[in-house]
Length: 319
Image (cartoon, rainbow, N blue to C red; front, side, top):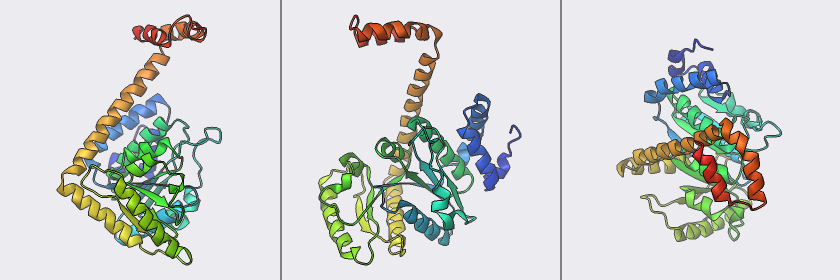
């Protein structure tokens, strides 16, 4: 794989893109080093897309929404990449490879690129590879990057930390208990989109929209943007254009307020700190002296002969 064709990636060749992503996802040191060198070369060509994070409760119709949304964007002349962050079952090999079959029509389109998340297990690893994959997709000319969270909980925070706009999909009804979506995730949301607002559910969806709008107004958002609550039907492709219109509004307001670059700069800084922490942990766990003293220290902490703090300090002294 050493003869990687960078020009081909930059000209939008899907096979070159897939090959570069495989290098990024590889655990082999030689591949990782090659991936890093490719990333450094593509960095000046990246960052020209709008990055949208999408999460939602199970059964909300996320795949149907992403497919309808992706197809709409392609009609608008955009090229769309869909990346999934799935830190779920390491036992089953991580990613549910159903993504492509779930978005059958979208995956057949030349202007779309769908990549299930790497079978990794550890969220940090998956998130890092997704960030790097995003840069490769941007360099390859994709205008809109959709990052979908498949797991729940921590993965939403990770995804919100790597996108420009974070959207939570909801079901009509259940406005009272906020559908088990954590308040923290509500605070991350730039928009709540109530899907399946069609047929009998249409009135319920409008009521839900009102409930969520007042709930959102209670949350203090410090930015220039007031999160919006919208309804749509991915199945009947109703209001999909309005969802995109809202994101475009957000984009122009963010550019006007000079908030766009600031947000991305902050995200890059945070990511660097996260990587430093992970690399420190790796370095520590690979240290032979630490390995040798760890069992003894663990035993002493368990039997309360020394404090956890003192034990941790002894380990750190070996760095």
